[in-house]
Length: 446
Image (cartoon, rainbow, N blue to C red; front, side, top):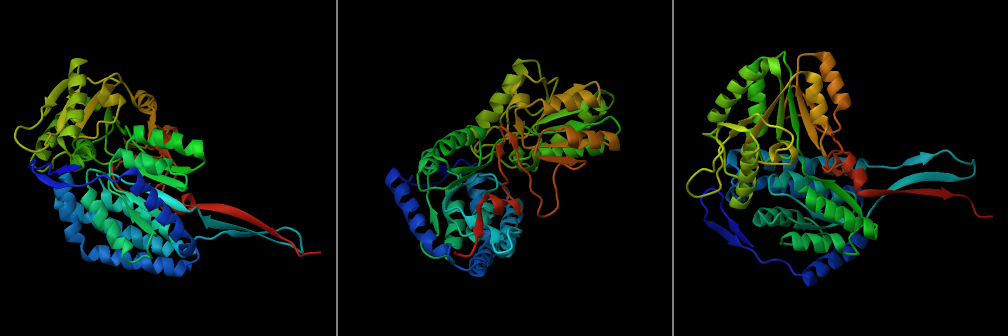
């Protein structure tokens, strides 16, 4: 694999792709290590993960520079992501020993209880847009519950993924955390491996569907957070400047490469003109501080969506064309006159594009926003308590955000719907995904 700096187009590294035999050996080592790791006291497992978190924190700047070089994400933003990963590891180190079963009330002379057991070997396949925080959650939850892990970082940031995983592995017994470099072929090899009990994947919906099929065929568990097509509804009773600021942040932060970025905007007609004018101004302000897309292949994908929209009648108010020169830059783009048949409304663009559709009223916006095969998240901007209540009860997504495109309390967890995946990918509930419940009924011998 050739890794290119998306800011300059310069080659960063060439990384060999693991072969099928290397994949098989990594899974076998993890399977062998599981016998000892699952017998390790929960407190000791947690202590090792806590020590690994400290090691990651001590090299935060190094990791941030790696991410910037491989993905183009500005280093100041990345430092926050690295710290989020550190905090996540510490969270699971605290929660792991507290993850417990429960006793049951049965016969007087019997003992009945339920106990959460590790599932075995977990294959963890992580993305490039938030490589430390996402990996920290999946690896941390798997390890503290007694599983061993084979981790394949994204092929777009393999050096970041390997460095992070090696920091963790240095505090673990041999084989407990194996690392493989590679592309989709390596991920497919892990998903199909008979000795892999769980496949945890954050990435595209197409890959998630393939993993789900393979896991279903062999009886493995799949935990999937896949693509999203997150709607933003802008009600009529708002300050258009504030609403536009929210929309721009949701669409343009990290060049639109956030799992819960705003992908399609529905604005109620009475506010539409003023809102769109403000959004165009916000897009032009963002142009001076936006980073590149992860690579030119992804930039081509974003541009293809914009071209499709224009061909079908959308109007470009700002942006729209790839930036000249080296790298993979694409400007903040605002489109109007959009409709559901355009790729920017029907598929995940995952770039700095704000497509706007004007609708007659809030109910129309809610109906159209809900009519989508994805179900990751949605945002509603409204001053109407009734509309807010109706929205969170109606929208078929895992996360509904009212009056803020980003944010949330620690420990929150949600399950994506539809094409966006299945299972809890974070929060305390992720510990449940990484374990299987066993019930024990114990009576005295005759």
